[in-house]
Length: 353
Image (cartoon, rainbow, N blue to C red; front, side, top):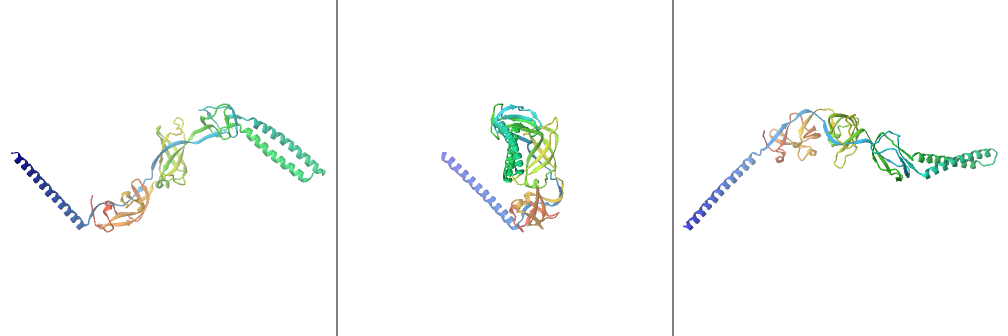
C-alpha cells in the first residue's frame, strides 16, 4: 500500500512538470512571434509634442545669507599699550569717533625730537642763505642745508602721524560687534582692536547658474524677503556680479538692501532674492528630455511622415524643464519626446498618446 502512494505521488509531480514545460514553451513561442511581428513592421512607439511659440517668464528665486556691507576689523597702526578704551561690545559708534588710545613713549619722544630738529634746521638754512650773500658759504652748502631741512620736514610729518594714530578712531558708522582688547593690552602694529558692523545696509549673496546670469545686470532692482519677517518685502539692487564662476560653476551675485526700522535684519540671517528679468518675446520651446545625449548635443528627433528624422538644432536658454530653440525648428514641427532611445535616423515610428 505504501508503494502505491509513492508511485502515485511521483506520477502527479511528473504530470505537473510536463504541464509547466508546455506553458513555458507556449509563452516563449508567443514572445518570438511578437518579436517577429515588431521586426517586420519596424515601428517604434513614441510620443510627440507639437512645437509652438510662447512667452518666456525668466523670473527665478535664489537663497542666501545676509552680510553687512560695511564690516571692518579695526587694527592698530602703531605698537604700544592700550591706555584707554572708550567703547564696549554693543556700543553704537559714528565715523571718526574715538575707540581707544595707545600709549607709546617712544612715539612721544620721536615727535618731540623731530619737531626740535626741524626748528634747528630752519635756523641753519636761514644762516647759510645769509652767509651765501656775503660769500661766506658756497651754493652747494646752501643746497645741502635745504635738502636736510626737507628730510626733517618729512620725518616730522611722519612723527605727527604716528602720534595721531595713537588715538584709534572708527572709520564708519556701526556697532561694536567684538572687542579684542582690554586696557593694558600690548599691541603690535596690525593687531585687531575691535570689529565694527554697520547693519544699516546689508547685502544678500546668492549663487546663479550660467543660464540665469546672462539675464542680470548691476543696477537691476530686486525684491528680497527674509524668513524672520515673511510679510515684509525689502527693496534691493544688484551691486555685484562675479566675472567668473565658482567651483560649482555658479556665479555669486550680491544684492544690497537698506534695512527697515522696526523690521531690521541682521548679518547672518537667511533671505531670498526674487529676480524678475523682463519677460522675453515669444520663443520656440521644447522639453529637455527631447535631446539625444543631453542639451549640449543639439540633436533631437522629429516626426517626418511617420519616420524619425534626426534634426540638428541650436539650443538657447534653459527654463526649468523647457529649452529655448533658436534655430533648426519651426512652429508646428512634431518633436519626439519619448522613445528616442530606440530610434535611428529614418526609423519607422508609431505615435502613441
